[in-house]
Length: 310
Length: 274
Image 1 (cartoon, rainbow over the protein chains, first blue to last red):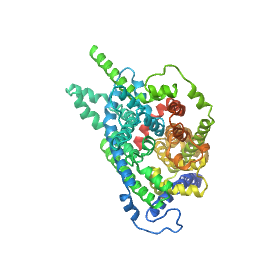
Image 2: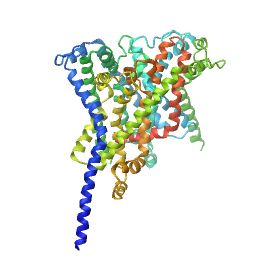
Image 3: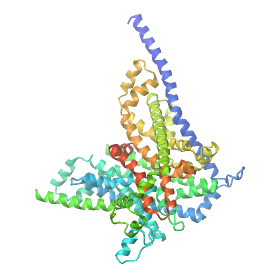
Image 4: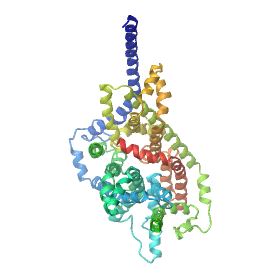
């Protein structure tokens, strides 16, 4: 080891450390925009929401009073908020179950070879592309309870009575859920097809040699291997369902009465519309916890499944 | 060989019939744009007896529709580009330097990934009122910047699969951090930028919640808001409303045709990274 070699090493080290410092500064600078956005658009408003939910803040009283959990109790007594809470849950669970039950068989069929497959896939997938608000408005005309509504005009022509699709409580709920299923089934079927393509064909060949029926193949091979896809799809559907706003708002505007009211519509109407910040914040906090719990359990579940499959 | 063939034909017929049934609403919107009001009420599902272009003429001579397109284009382009830039910078920073502070920040950012827009809507509304950015297109862009955190997570997941040596080599050649970002990192992560960009574009372009809360002047409406207001405006003129809808849908259809591939790959990426 000569002296020059040692000198070179120290110089290299020093340069390395210098570059390191520069790197750290740069790294911190590059993180700055994301951190500012995170603090301004997430942390501060979340804190404010939580604090306001414990006060009678309305935007008109400059010094809001601390009222504990009174706002949370009010939610459970307010007919519109309670209705919004219940319908949102019904919508989230209903669409998740129905779409999962439809999208998996659809994906299995879409994964087979047949004429016009691309066209069929595009037609199913298409409703996921445009704005849900516009589709809701179109469906409002299709399902209009008047005789001029599309479905009703067909019924009348067939000599049947027209049906109040959007004007009776139960039918309005069903209608919103059915349109929600119509809009998202194709999207989730495409998600499942992507996972189906990763299942090795040999599995099915071996099963066939062993004499397994196609039903046994579906329940024995396809369904278990789709578990990771199901976790993702149902998670997207549940969180999307809890966040639903556009579709019921444009299709029924929450009516008749409050039968298709949603949490988001409650937050917008009572918070932004009526300025009842305390009450609306309490609802927002409950909503945040629901989505948060769901998200973290999905993350945990994905990790467990990844470990089992690898 | 005939049995599989017959099965394939049966499957085709069944699947095409089902898909056409699902597509009835789309068929219904398009055909009625070529009808007069009376023609639509009489037989909403029948194809038009003669093509009537009056609705399209009226829509395309209405300056408001162009205005709303320009508004949406401005908001979408600015919001998505900023989201991608902020997300990519943060992802690169995390890859470049892992310290305890950065790990803490990375874990905290998960909150921004999970928390939905509704949770922060009211405080942010008050904030934008204070900043005089309500009823302002730039206010919408600020609201959409929250999507940067989503971009960050998808981009950093992709970056971890890249060969770190390329960045290292550029650094040994004496390139600064910003220069490495522009000329090495950004080209390398182009596929994920396209995928995430497609998803964010669909979100911002189609969003209804934020514009409906934050925009009140007719001149500042986005396309979706313009269509929503067209319904109350043409209370009974449904062919007119259908035409506005079709015109509003055209850009999304074109966008879909060109990006279909990325949407599917994005479904997978979004899924894998949670």
